[in-house]
Length: 186
Image (tube, rainbow, N blue to C red; front, side, top):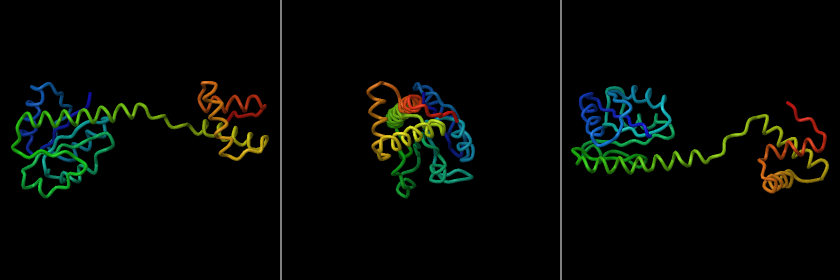
């Protein structure tokens, strides 16, 4: 579930918005009244949505937006006059006063975007360790030396063998090294 953080300079406003969202089936993780509290909260979480006002005692919404780590979106709630002066290209904005249904619909759109982003993150391959990189490099060097291949050709060869055998690149590189009697223990 996406974490929702509500931040307004007046804590009562933030608590009222929390009650409104809770009544409509949303869990609110944190309620804050300063930008520093939001920054502290987002650094403890994986991702989500920050619903905030225009200005806090310690920072402006744009500064807060710059501090948000990857995986967080911002929904800015402000008067139409203030929104006219805002750069809202990388965030969502809703003029105040707002209709409850407009808020809920906007939040739903943002949650859908968040879940799509989260799903894409799971599909990304994990970074290889230095040991795995070294093993692949050694296998490529062996192929280049013994079979007079370029680095590109050696890499493509390891990829092809990997796909044909149903193993990953690191396992294939290890097999090539073992078959050729090379030590790859690091």
